[in-house]
Length: 179
Image (cartoon, rainbow, N blue to C red; front, side, top):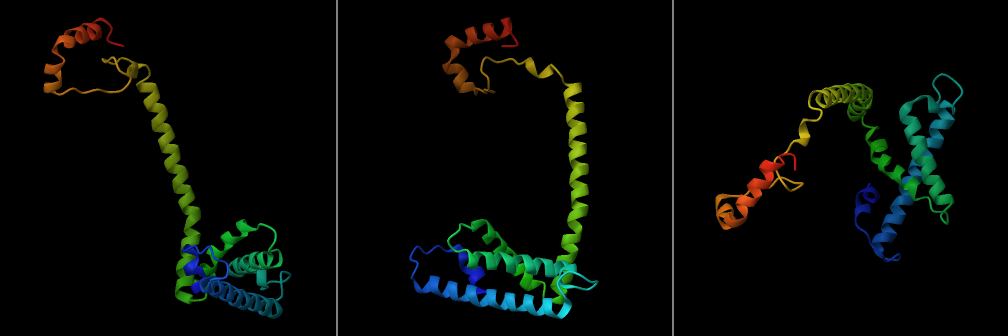
């Protein structure tokens, strides 16, 4: 709906037409979602039984969105800004009503567990190669041939400009290569 799309633009005037429109659409969409939730609970039952309302994952998502909206309306004085994060789920709730998109969203959510396994495997491989690198190269990184703590490359024109100091630099580096 419009209220979800237009939250990105901030309007500081509480009584502007834009904020009033957002408030009205918020009430309308919340009322529609609450009505849908109540009708489904009356039709299927709430939680006890085989095919009740909260046995379906999509209905659980709907219920969480509705309860978060109700808490925000019932307790306006209390700072419930964390519950506003559930507004992000409203487009997902709306998209879940379209059968083709519902299949795609279900496939994406089911693939999250498999992606977790892949991330764990990649983390394990990175740890193994990190430990191998530390074992193979331990102590080798400390022998550097420069005076500064960071790499410095001088081009030929700078070397010519620093010719009087260049001999001193070379003598210092050759005397202590790990400097």
